[in-house]
Image 1 (cartoon, rainbow, N blue to C red):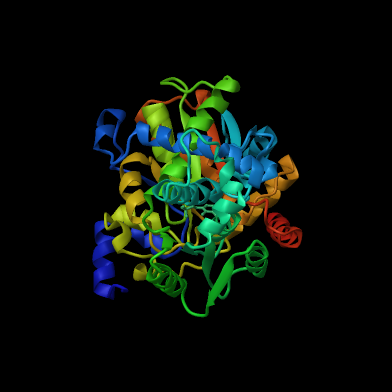
Image 2 (image 1 turned 60 degrees about the vertical axis):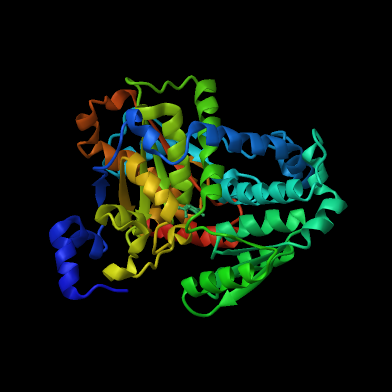
Length: 443
Ligand SMILES: *Cc1c(COP(=O)(O)O)cnc(C)c1O
């Protein structure tokens, strides 16, 4: 429901930054509600919840090795490398007129197996969690049995009696579709008609049903939820309010801790860690932030990034209205090339947690995403989808603000991680078009 002009004026009076946000200008916002580790007991989840989620991943590792041979090398653990990107850092220093002291890394979730995006964490986790609970409820699992049996015909024909639905125009649909079909579930992905053809083709090829909706994407979600839950054996993956997705994402923090230790990267009072996370509904960046805060406490500083045309979590947090307001309510169109971030309304559960844990949010224009995509390709030979490049401007945004000074931090000792959220499933031709767009803009 859009606000009247009078109401919008009142909002702008109350939060002057809205003027720029509504004019679609890039902005930088610091979160006044950030809590410190002494107050973490206020949070609805704990470290133990993350550890239990990690144990579920461990139980399913033998299944994943069997069902997805590309996970064999990592023993069925779905994880991505952490890469130092010094050449990109140099290039940013030259062209962006910024100086980034400290070290700059890329967390390469674009390389995650199964889904080629960050959704391989949350989406796969939620489906595995559901499959396990069904198997336990029906007494299919013998105590101590290897989860390899989830790849057996016996399990597959059992899961055929159950259906899973999800509304998604992109990567979440791919991840839920692929893992659900592999386990034997009937899976339906509800998409808007303008979803990319290659995604629909890939999903159908993997055995998912694709339902297309001509109207607004929210219609796809509403119908998808309805049709899925009309079936007593139906389960709807709710991106707008899912604790399971959130926990699946949070496990990344335990893995990152290990990777940082292996690379001798210190994180403590004198060596702050900055993490920049592209944000759609806020589930993946929220889950990862929650995990990182549990692991590193006040020494990690997490920032979300949204497109100027889809600043849904920013508006939700800034106004304090959370999921009750959408960008459309503020006259913003939610049209962006960053399709993984094109979300008009934030997730309920994760936004209430992020409200206390994130340091801030900045927004970027689509043209910047294309430019970063081409620069990263040229400097590091890494090719991301447009959404996934958004974190690369993080160091510049934070370093030119008063954040470090306010928190008494030294820029020289900092490590920065841009979370690269997807890209490896994008067809070569599409990627070439993205890259050329970026090259043109850089000229
Ligand atoms: C889904 C997605 C995100 C954001 O995740 P949310 O949970 O929607 O906030 C970021 N980047 C890519 C590539 C994605 O697919």
